[in-house]
Length: 447
Ligand SMILES: [Fe+2]
Image 1 (cartoon, rainbow, N blue to C red):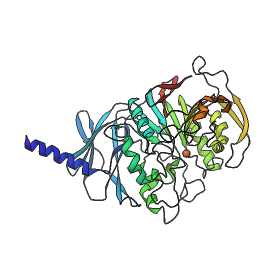
Image 2 (image 1 turned 180 degrees about the vertical axis):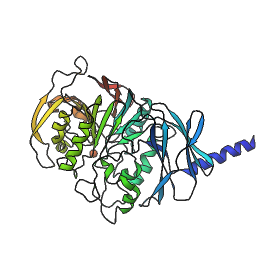
Image 3 (image 1 turned 90 degrees about the horizontal axis):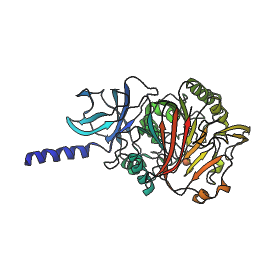
Image 4 (image 1 turned 45 degrees about the vertical axis):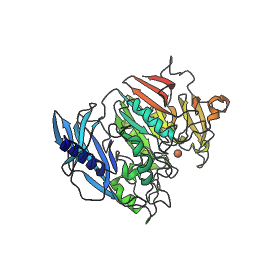
């Protein structure tokens, strides 16, 4: 009995020592669904030699995966550490699969992974997330209880400056804890917001590029090009090195999940989506997705929104005609810390103003759509789901309809909330839930 207890304690100690950040799941560079799915598994460990093996349980046998590789991040204030990555392969689409991590011959971690589903699924979306607040933790718990197949964060992943030290302090411990074991079971996707890009003064800023693993099929930007996240030579070198091929390319990308094609855009102020290379990529991506039952564009800065806060940041409006032409169903954004939903709308820019002003133009609003009786939308619906943790903006506007823009149909800023998308081939249901799982808003779209 005593020796059993000693063995258990040894295992526990080994497990505790093994990780700085416990294993978490990412889609990896796998934009398209496949008959056998894959997922990337990442974890952070001390900068010491160790033998790591990842195994997946397939047909009652533990199958070793390819050897994990690592990149080293040496950017203060955290001590240098290793970001390990292994790819879980041959996963049956949709079926949860046990996996385990072995270090120096001892099993130090075990969980179940949810591979991408081929058809109907449930995706959770929220933005403006990890600020270390009570609201962030409450949303994380509520998201776990909503049982998503995957989670998408619509930017401002980590406050205040997207730094590695901030991920360590209040991102991973909230979304990947023993109590809220989300990221170890459920792939998280995301887009960088204005808080996630390189900041002067902080060598560990823009940790997004080093810590996330998402498709590398966005515009083929190179460091220093005008639409790439700007870095300072000498200051951000360690972060760029730890990012491998992800910097700066992983800022925009696209992927398929189930019946949805997602186009994910870096909407930060340094990107001009009117530049020919950027616009051509966006158009080609949407054109290639015309056979997908549903199309979603996700980005941080909303095209259309009613909050007084960040009202002038509606600079992404010029892409609206392309989204309409290629029949995008939903545009999901964050940045503004509340929940907003527009009517389906079409927009013709009449004046491409400078950054810092909403782009002027003509609106055609689908007044008939109500998401209940009338469920076929004429134009994309724009959602702001930025109430994912950070302090809410303009709560007074919740009940002040006169302060809303004419296309806004719902505005909720007195509660933290998140979006649940229940997707089927001909029907997409969008529900906005609060931290207690109560429904604040719901619409149905049909084809
Ligand atoms: Fe933001």
